[in-house]
Amino acid sequence: MAKYERRFQGDFDNALRVLHDGILSGSMSATYEDGSDYAGGNVRCAVRVYERFSLVGGNRVSLNLTLLGHGTDLFLSAITSGGSQAVFFKINTWGEEAFLDCVRGLAEQL
Image 1 (cartoon, rainbow, N blue to C red):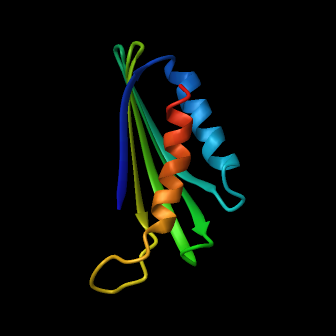
Image 2 (image 1 turned 45 degrees about the vertical axis):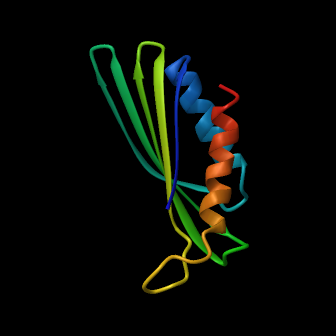
């Protein structure tokens, strides 16, 4: 499992759109699996789950993306999972790191 978190300022809808579109266009095999949205008062939360095939690892990797917004104060949490080929311990996590690198690059442009 790999994790990336970042606090930043911006427009919630724009940030979510940039992340979503960038993840899907960042890999030919990336798919949007499902999501959930919540809004209450001045707080918004979007949860998105993506999956893609890791050619290097030879397996599928998932990405859970959570974007929390309070006005223009935004917090992003991205966590990858899967990709390991071992039974009792994790080996071969290249696919998780590569998926997270895609998100990191998109987030740092916001």
